[in-house]
Image (cartoon, rainbow, N blue to C red; front, side, top):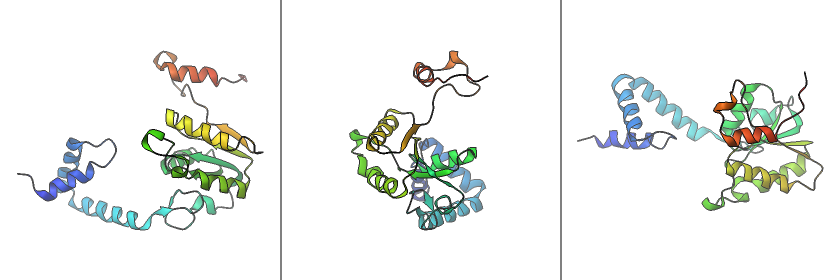
Amino acid sequence: MQSPLIKKLIDAFCCLPGVGPKSAQRMTYHLLERHKDAASHLSESLAQAVKGIKHCQRCRDFTENDVCTICDSTARDTTLLCIVESPADVYAIEATAGYKGKYFVLMGHLSPLDGVGPDDIGLDVLKELVIKEAPAEIILATNSTVEGEATAHFISEMFNKSEVTISRLASGVPIGGELEYLDGGTLMQSLSDRRIYQS
């Protein structure tokens, strides 16, 4: 008979994306058998993060302060506004060290079937931000999924009568990718987004 506390911990791990009952069980027993100190550290860190992390009042990214370090920085290019679906997307773009503008985090995407509408992802807040800061360009960096594309289209329609330039992240053949291994949708997108080759 499994301990109720162990079952509770396994169930808790199952809330993580991609973690099923078997993986959760392995993690639980691994921590309890070999790494009790690490388990305690994990528990404390998680509790501190849940208590101390909140949303940036400007861009809605995760932060410990009222305004995140990116929004607070005077070195960022205020003419560029990159719109992403999640804080993880901000981290991914920042890791490239190639973007120096600011962000707005939707915390999701439009999904009418799931009851997620424009106000649920902060598009009313985004509209106010664009009016207030008047960026020269909005970069739509939502995911290349049906929902991500629908969200990007909706946002572009929101600002189609304004002076702001709307751009979309390019998608298609990855660096090092071979055409024979690409799916048809990716290849079609690559052809649609082709550009003049500069030698």
